[in-house]
Image (cartoon, rainbow, N blue to C red):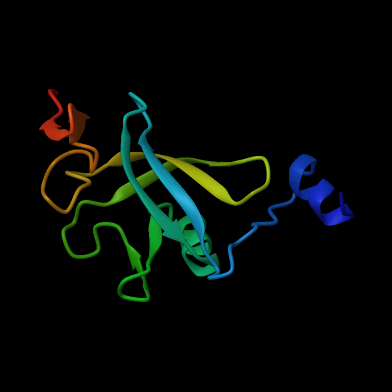
Length: 124
Protein backbone atom coordinates (compact mmCIF):
# COMPACT_ATOMS: atom_id res chain seq x y z
CA UNK A 1 0.00 0.00 0.00
CA UNK A 2 1.38 3.38 -0.96
CA UNK A 3 1.77 6.23 1.51
CA UNK A 4 -1.06 8.13 -0.21
CA UNK A 5 -3.35 5.07 -0.05
CA UNK A 6 -2.54 4.65 3.62
CA UNK A 7 -3.27 8.34 4.28
CA UNK A 8 -6.46 8.09 2.22
CA UNK A 9 -7.73 5.11 4.24
CA UNK A 10 -6.65 6.04 7.76
CA UNK A 11 -5.75 9.73 7.76
CA UNK A 12 -7.77 12.86 8.36
CA UNK A 13 -7.14 14.60 5.01
CA UNK A 14 -9.68 14.62 2.23
CA UNK A 15 -8.00 12.88 -0.73
CA UNK A 16 -10.87 11.96 -3.07
CA UNK A 17 -10.18 9.08 -5.42
CA UNK A 18 -12.04 10.11 -8.57
CA UNK A 19 -12.50 7.58 -11.35
CA UNK A 20 -10.98 7.89 -14.84
CA UNK A 21 -13.76 10.37 -15.75
CA UNK A 22 -13.07 12.52 -12.68
CA UNK A 23 -16.18 11.36 -10.80
CA UNK A 24 -17.18 9.66 -7.60
CA UNK A 25 -20.53 8.16 -6.61
CA UNK A 26 -22.82 10.09 -4.29
CA UNK A 27 -25.72 8.50 -2.43
CA UNK A 28 -28.17 10.96 -0.86
CA UNK A 29 -30.21 9.87 2.15
CA UNK A 30 -32.77 11.69 4.27
CA UNK A 31 -30.98 12.94 7.38
CA UNK A 32 -33.93 12.03 9.64
CA UNK A 33 -35.23 8.63 8.51
CA UNK A 34 -32.30 7.40 6.37
CA UNK A 35 -34.39 6.75 3.24
CA UNK A 36 -32.29 6.71 0.07
CA UNK A 37 -33.41 9.72 -1.96
CA UNK A 38 -31.13 9.61 -4.98
CA UNK A 39 -27.80 8.50 -6.43
CA UNK A 40 -25.69 10.79 -8.58
CA UNK A 41 -22.08 11.63 -9.39
CA UNK A 42 -19.78 14.39 -8.19
CA UNK A 43 -16.63 15.83 -9.69
CA UNK A 44 -14.12 17.89 -7.71
CA UNK A 45 -16.01 21.10 -8.46
CA UNK A 46 -19.36 19.67 -7.28
CA UNK A 47 -17.81 18.30 -4.08
CA UNK A 48 -16.21 21.68 -3.34
CA UNK A 49 -19.44 23.60 -4.11
CA UNK A 50 -21.40 21.27 -1.83
CA UNK A 51 -19.00 21.93 1.03
CA UNK A 52 -18.95 25.69 0.40
CA UNK A 53 -22.70 26.27 0.01
CA UNK A 54 -24.24 23.58 2.21
CA UNK A 55 -26.45 22.47 -0.69
CA UNK A 56 -25.89 19.37 -2.80
CA UNK A 57 -24.18 19.84 -6.16
CA UNK A 58 -23.58 17.09 -8.70
CA UNK A 59 -22.13 16.43 -12.13
CA UNK A 60 -24.48 15.37 -14.93
CA UNK A 61 -22.84 12.81 -17.17
CA UNK A 62 -25.48 13.27 -19.89
CA UNK A 63 -25.26 17.08 -19.97
CA UNK A 64 -21.56 17.11 -19.10
CA UNK A 65 -22.19 19.94 -16.63
CA UNK A 66 -22.25 20.64 -12.93
CA UNK A 67 -25.64 21.34 -11.35
CA UNK A 68 -27.12 22.14 -7.97
CA UNK A 69 -30.08 19.99 -6.97
CA UNK A 70 -33.11 22.27 -7.01
CA UNK A 71 -31.55 25.08 -9.02
CA UNK A 72 -34.60 25.15 -11.33
CA UNK A 73 -37.29 23.38 -9.25
CA UNK A 74 -36.46 24.93 -5.88
CA UNK A 75 -36.33 21.43 -4.37
CA UNK A 76 -32.84 21.77 -2.90
CA UNK A 77 -31.01 19.32 -0.69
CA UNK A 78 -29.67 21.01 2.46
CA UNK A 79 -26.60 19.01 3.44
CA UNK A 80 -26.25 18.06 7.09
CA UNK A 81 -23.41 15.54 6.86
CA UNK A 82 -21.03 14.20 4.23
CA UNK A 83 -19.65 10.73 4.86
CA UNK A 84 -16.66 9.48 2.86
CA UNK A 85 -16.06 5.77 2.36
CA UNK A 86 -12.82 4.01 3.32
CA UNK A 87 -10.96 4.58 0.05
CA UNK A 88 -12.59 7.97 -0.64
CA UNK A 89 -14.20 7.04 -3.96
CA UNK A 90 -17.82 7.40 -2.81
CA UNK A 91 -19.81 9.70 -0.54
CA UNK A 92 -23.06 9.52 1.38
CA UNK A 93 -24.80 12.84 1.78
CA UNK A 94 -27.28 13.10 4.62
CA UNK A 95 -29.63 15.92 3.71
CA UNK A 96 -32.95 17.61 4.34
CA UNK A 97 -34.99 17.67 1.15
CA UNK A 98 -36.79 20.94 0.45
CA UNK A 99 -39.50 19.24 -1.58
CA UNK A 100 -39.54 16.15 -3.81
CA UNK A 101 -36.10 14.83 -4.69
CA UNK A 102 -37.01 12.98 -7.88
CA UNK A 103 -37.60 14.88 -11.12
CA UNK A 104 -40.87 12.88 -11.41
CA UNK A 105 -42.23 14.79 -8.39
CA UNK A 106 -41.97 12.04 -5.78
CA UNK A 107 -39.97 12.09 -2.55
CA UNK A 108 -37.33 9.55 -3.58
CA UNK A 109 -35.99 8.42 -6.94
CA UNK A 110 -36.43 4.88 -5.57
CA UNK A 111 -40.22 4.77 -5.75
CA UNK A 112 -40.58 1.36 -7.44
CA UNK A 113 -39.72 -2.14 -6.28
CA UNK A 114 -38.86 -5.10 -8.49
CA UNK A 115 -41.33 -7.94 -7.76
CA UNK A 116 -41.69 -11.02 -9.92
CA UNK A 117 -40.01 -9.29 -12.87
CA UNK A 118 -42.21 -6.18 -12.74
CA UNK A 119 -41.82 -2.72 -11.25
CA UNK A 120 -44.38 -2.02 -8.53
CA UNK A 121 -44.83 1.34 -6.75
CA UNK A 122 -43.38 1.40 -3.24
CA UNK A 123 -46.02 1.95 -0.60
CA UNK A 124 -45.22 4.93 1.59
